[in-house]
Every structure is written in structure tokens, then in C-alpha cells.
Length: 416
Image (cartoon, rainbow, N blue to C red; front, side, top):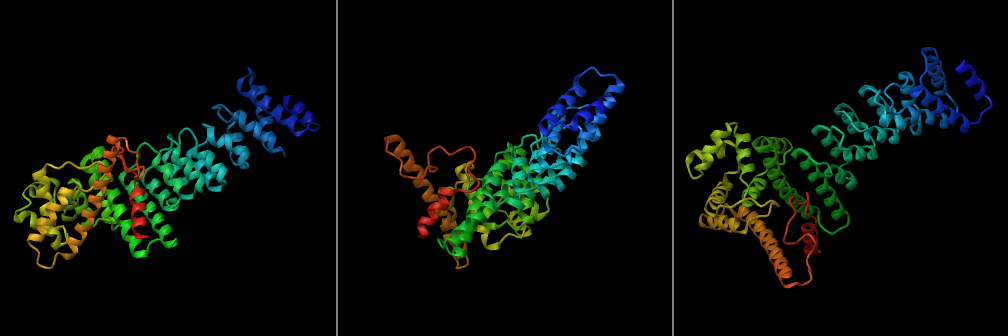
């Protein structure tokens, strides 16, 4: 009876009237006290409306049935495959859709449908993986900012691979409360590559100069990431990051030496463990006696450059003598660098020129940073208006940006 009367009336009603009636019927199905035959007729009537020619009617059904756990299952599935403005309420809220259905809807849907799925209160890891692989840029950004999205490290890295050159995408990923070290490293590389391409295209730097500057910024950021990994996950976190850096060709002697000269010993120890294949306890024991033959054998087994051995020994000695703690923002220590330079000068045989050139670059960077900080202190104490970049302030944030844009800008001005 319900179905016959409704269909008879619907033949003369306009789209707005049918939409209002569809919403009322959906609410009655969900909340009214209907007997089994009335409920069956109402379900058949609602299902028939899924093929109504007007999207207003189908949208009214979707909005009223989206959050219901006892909505007609077949109707919900039909609405989820409708055009995106109809399907979006179902895709974003319905508890009846399985992970497989959500993945299928993401595969065939447009950016609006994908975004609706990405913004669900809970997005399972399998659905996140599908969106990370096939989702449009806007859907990926929505997924990244959704705290209910269970995104694995692999899916996060895939999002960086696809959209890492997009600043809004990088910002969305960085807004997540926790990021694996490997993902932060991928974001560093993406940001550095984007900045490097920009300055080269503008003609501000040569390709070689931009590549060196980009590499230095990546190394500085990676030292920060190592410190975070050690704080969050201990040795295991640092070891996993070292494995990633090694597999991706980013683990260089320059990076490891920079970490040591910033007071960070974790990266060096994890590198020796990873490259030598020895147990962590064995490596730690040999590292304590860094002047001994055992350490030299360990260093050689790890395949690190032989010419860098004096520098690593001098850096370890300086850390011990000065009880140097790592800087949270990966700043190089001028004290450590000068100690290593003095040690290299004492054994200068003409083979350390390349190493000393690297150390001189580190020295210049540390001296400039120290001058910026000291000037900021004096300005703060004397109430002198700041003339330095905003980031060059006395108190450094607990976690520095992945790429130091002010240092990058200073380098550009120097090159101009």
C-alpha cells in the first residue's frame, strides 16, 4: 500500500517535492514503529527511489541514511556508486560500507568522492594505501590532515613520492602528530629538490651550487631527524633510519661527520653497526676505545673513507673532552670543528685537502650561526630592533623546520 500510493503520487510531484518525501520516508523507515510488512514496503519504495531521475531525490536519501547502521544495505551500496554529490554523504559517514567497497569507490570515483572517503572518522590502513596510490592531490591532502586515517609509513612515503613537490601536501603531512623518520627524510628530499629546481630555474644559482646547498640542507635536517628518532624509538629508530639512508644512497661520510660535529654520536654508531654487520654491543665497545686498532678495523670493515679516519677520531676525542651534548637543531659545534681541524693539520700530508675543505665549510657555517645567535642575544638584551631573519632568534623551536629556509636565503644573497 505504501509503495503504490507513493509511486502514484510521485508521477505528478516535482523534484523538490519528491526529495522532501524521500527524506521523510527514509526517516520513517529508520525511526518509526513499523510492522514487518510496512517496513518491507518502505524499503522497496526507498530502493526504487535510488533510480529517480533527479539527483535531489537521491541526495535526500543519502543524507538521511548516511549514518544509519540499519539502513537498507543494497540501497546504501547503490548510493555509494552514484555521482559524487549524491555519494559523498554515504562515502564519508556510512558504517555499512566495507573496506573493499570503499577501495572500489575510490578507484572509480572522482576527486570529491575520494576526498569524502579520506575524511571519514576512521580510515583503515588498506583504504589509506589505496588512496595514497591512486587518490588525487586534494584527496591525499585531506587524508594527510585526518587524525583518524591509519596511514602506514609505506603509504606516507608513497604520498611524498607522488606529491612531494607540492608545498601544501608537505605541510599537511607535517601537521600529523607523528611521522616516521623515513617519511621525514622523504619530505626533506622533496623540499630540497623543489627549492633547488626553483633557484636554478630563476638563474640565481648554478646547478652545481644549488646541488651542494641542497645537500647541505638535507644533511642538516637529517641530523635533526636522527635526534628525533633516538628520542622516540631509541636505537631501533636510528637503526631503521640508517638502513633507509643506506638503501637510498643518502648515507655519506659527510653526513655522519656532520652529526658527530653537532654532538650527535647515535648516527655514527648505527652506521658502523649497519655497515659492519657486527652486534650493537660489540660496536659500542670498540667505539669506546676509538684510538685502538680494533676501532680502526671496525672503521675499515664498515667501508668508510680511510682518509676520514683521523677526523672521526678527533671528533670523538673532542666530544669526550668537552662533554659535548647534541644540539636539538643540528647546529654544528665550532669547538669540535676547530679541534678536528687542528688534528688534521698536525698530520697534514697533502692527502687531507678534500677533508679540510669540507671542515672549512662546516667551520664557516658554525661561525655564521654563532654570530647570528650572539647578535640576536645582544639585540634582545639591548632592546635593539632585530635586523636578522625572523628564524635567527635566540630561542630555537623544539623541532627546527625540515629545511632551514633562512639559511637557504642567506646563501642565495651571498651568491647573488
